[in-house]
Image (cartoon, rainbow, N blue to C red; front, side):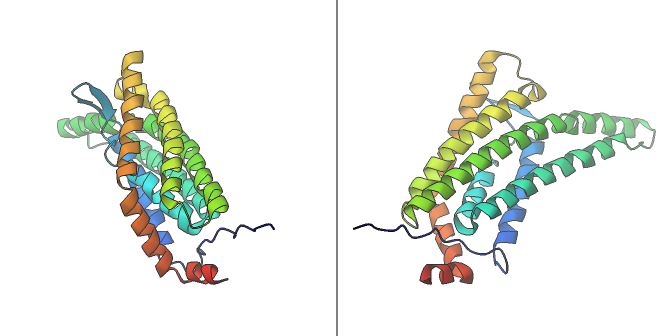
Amino acid sequence: MTTTTRPAVYASRAGARHFDLLLTAMCVVIILSNIGASKGVQLGPVVTDGGFFLFPAAYILGDVISEVYGPRAARRSIIAGFACSVLAVLTFWVVLALPGLGDDQAAAKQAALEGALGPVWQIVLASALGFVVGQTSNALVMVRMKSRFGERGLAARLMASTGVGEFLDTLVFCSVAATAIGISSWGQWANYVAFGFLWKTAVEYLLVPVTSRVIGAIKRSEPSYREGLLR
């Protein structure tokens, strides 16, 4: 006797109540994290950047989108996050290139903006590469595991996808962004990678119960998801 696996259920983006809000929140988190990451931060023996405390939210939002709305929605969110990052860089480039008022105060502001926003293009490049690699692998693990186990094992999906996605994202991001924040040795780079991965993974693991409840609430509130479960 053979058993068939129930196809994975996802909510439709058409008429979705929450997808646009989740996507908007993800894009905002990415842009703010990129700006914050242009500052190197020393916390005791730990080397990190100014965006470290916020960026895990991007992966939590990505998990919610992948679990509730499926692989196409996940790809859409990755493309949107990448596009918003590029738009931010182009905006900063135009702002820095525009002529100032020509006085000493304007010159001081220009220097401050160049110091703060000048490295952002490298941070965004690092973030975009890391985000595409990490979120793609994160979404792939979520979708593949859901296809195999259905609605069961949500916590396991969240933890497995986080481990894979955050490791690849952190490795790529730190390798490209290191020089932009002043990292100049292999020891600092290793510190940067290790802390980034452990911190982001720990935050997401600690928030798995909360993420699971949020996912459950969104599933219940999306009519198309409830309809899919009844088929």
